[in-house]
Image (cartoon, rainbow, N blue to C red; front, side, top):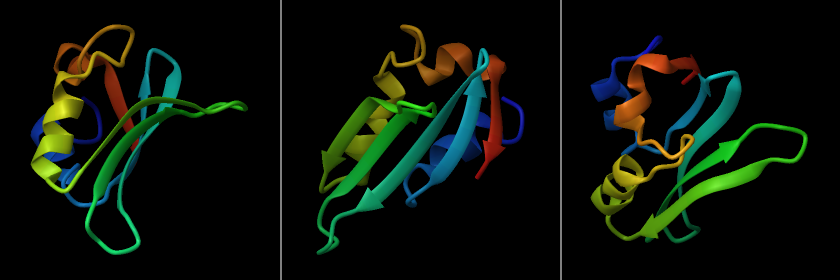
Length: 93
């Protein structure tokens, strides 16, 4: 991973991240946010394009649950973040 270590990247997912990454020429935004009453945390991954496409969404009261779901999700061409870590560039965040 260029621009972050993988452990830094994963650690940031617990704290309302706004990260833009690139993988094989495709740009993604990884964002985390809380609801209006600060009860639910949502972690989301969206392809950045003229017609954005949400690839992953997980909402829970428990941030650990959201991050664990992201770590297991095969959202990058059928692969997890761990399988593609050497091919990711962090562009922002």
